[in-house]
Amino acid sequence: MAGKFGTSNVEIQKNVSLASFNTLRLTVQAERFAVAKSLADVAQAAGMVAREGIALQVLGAGSNVVLRNDLPGLTLRMSIHGRSCINGLLTASAGEYWDPLVDYAIDQGGFGLENLSMIPGTVGAAPVQNIGAYGTQLSDRFAHLTAFDRRTDQFVELNRAACGFGYRDSIFKSSARGRYIICEVSLFVDAKFLPNLAYPGVAAWAGAHPDARAVRAAVMALRSARLPDLGLTPNVGSFFKNPIIGKQSTQALLAANPDLVSWEAEGGYKVSAGWLIERAGCKGMAVGGAMVSEQHALVLVNRGNARPADIEALSQQVQRRVQDAFGLTLEIEPDCFPES
Image 1: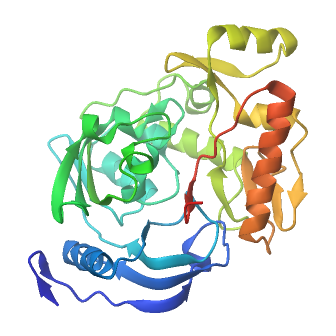
Image 2 (image 1 turned 45 degrees about the vertical axis):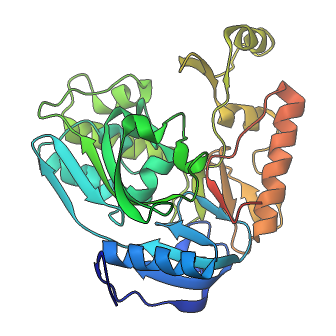
């Protein structure tokens, strides 16, 4: 079909299982499903959704989403590809996978993303979550993105300020949720490598004077040691955000728990959610097919037959136990579809 944004051949399928499109491997269905391979496909799909007045959910790799139930309306999987690294600007289409992009940037002499190695998912999902790890987050390197604005029926460019980035947060999860379909992301990279060794584990693995490959290898080794393998144990990585609290609250917790894991960050103190969950006695706790990982308490895993209700019930139990033990509220990190 030809439209004002070009020719589109997007195919709409009905009643499609999403078990292979989310890394928790939850068995839910999409009422309608399509794969966008071009900007024209995105525009056509958005137009169809608007005309028919149905819901739209956008999926990348499904590595940071919890599918609570069957998805009504159209589920659009982003599979637009392309990448470049020119004059300090790394640009990639939404369907590109994140970790290979980090590797590509290093090959092209673009540095600064090494600490974000091995984060699962696609480029288009990265700004939604403002992905981060080991002392670096996407917003530190963000230049701009191109997205389809469903309100104006146009492709637009949004800069860093417009995206409203926060800790694992952005306007795409809050005030502008559902409005934009991210199609391309551009990031600033450095021509000269300056290692970020602020996280002690990275420095220990990488050595005193590492190159970019050594830092990337260190981060990958740390992640592999700490987190369950997605290919073997279905999960979405960190399930809860690290709470950010004030100095007095941190001091009070430290007085009662001298081994509390916390650090200064973003105008307050971050407290390790994994530490809180483990100390609340949740490690290994299970509901149905869902379990708190024995490897890392911050990760909820699918033991093979988990239902969405199992994941939800387990996460609520963890939140209650942490609240009862420490008076802190854990926020869920991944996006949840459909919205409750």
